[in-house]
Image 1 (cartoon, one colour):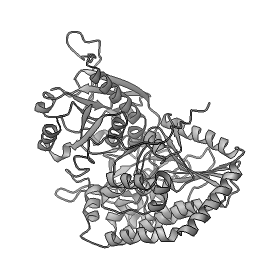
Image 2 (cartoon, rainbow, N blue to C red):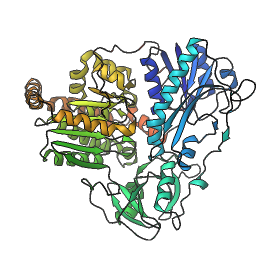
Image 3 (cartoon, helix red, strand yellow):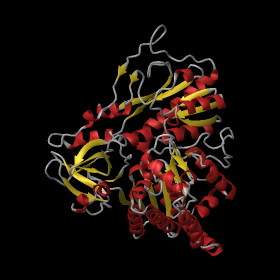
Image 4 (tube, rainbow, N blue to C red):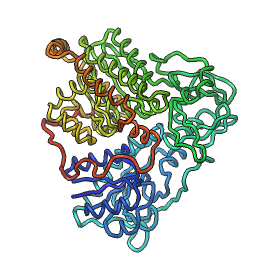
Length: 584
């Protein structure tokens, strides 16, 4: 079928839906509703889709569109749930079971006939993590089922009201407002504060005042040792700030200044950077790299060793890695190399693996070009350290999405293990960049020069299944996000105990030496960075406007339509499918 996706933004769910539908043989195109209703109408006229799917839509579709072409709306709530803040209410009410419903668009919001409903468990995570994890998995299953039912021509969707409707208990929930999110620091215990913060992540955040300024607070993690007067800022760690509650404290990784009337749009930054001098006066807490299992605190990088296996887990907000993030992760990696291990797992237990350089920190910098240059060099230092590791096997474990330099960070490892719901974007073109992180070395050696060029040029999202077939990944784990770390540890244990491990390490070292002789890594880095330098220090380069629009979430910007030569079909996917079955 030919399916047109209509979305307010080409976000993680829209990217995954595009890639999943393409994997299933459908022709797919995308138009952004943020471009305006006329742009959507023009896309419908030009492409004449058989079906419209709206995976993420903040505004209703016009009647002349949904009355002329079947339109399926993805609602992140169970059957009967209605309203614009479904996931917010799920977390606010402490729901342990939720769902995604695919509805036919109609005049009344969320009241159309039901094509599919898929339930999912709700773990204790932030809203954005839940959205990209369990909710995304359920949404994909629900949409694929709905498209299959629609294509069959014989399925009748379930009405929610009127004759023939089954009993549907309708619950209307209004939009979740800041008044409901507001934290009372003099009364709310830590658990309540964390829940409010996680319910607002990543948008809109919890509006609050800090040192006489208004900020939206993003992200919340409990702290088990630091104490102070409720509401008091206590310390900083790795860019986050710790704030006291009535019975403990919480870590807040990011802040976003409140937009003033008529002022420019604001964007999230590491909390300490956003606070500036106020954060400089706070005592810095040491990095919490190795922590006992019982500790409840925040750290974006952690290391644990189990026999001859080292686990270097990290998770940066939004997957963005600033110069400081890269340098701290490199220091942690070098520490891990001092430990007596034969397998080193590098990755994120769930949610983003990495999205490359931190465009927000770059935009905030006094000299964005210089900060871009520092950031990409810090990324290169990290990637090069991994590529030059020849005394053990290095595994990149992707519990979630990876893009741009973050995807190439993963490809520096000896093996790439992906959760089934992960989406890879191993390209830079949509940000106007040539790319770095040794992509001209690692990408062709995995997929071949022709496919490497196609991936970079088409700049399309790739599902974990396609990544496995292309050679971008080595193992696929078709499990829920919560189960991914356990499955990784099971397979890492098997790898560490394999009889040919030492042979593989020796062959790896020999291959690195051969490659270095043929062309040194320094040559790849120098050539890539020459392209990047010209872009970063050219004020007229498109990268600067694209970056500004991206971090400010400027309306009407995003991936162009058509996305990338729609209708060309999926890329050739050679090779056998190797799926790591769940263990235990």
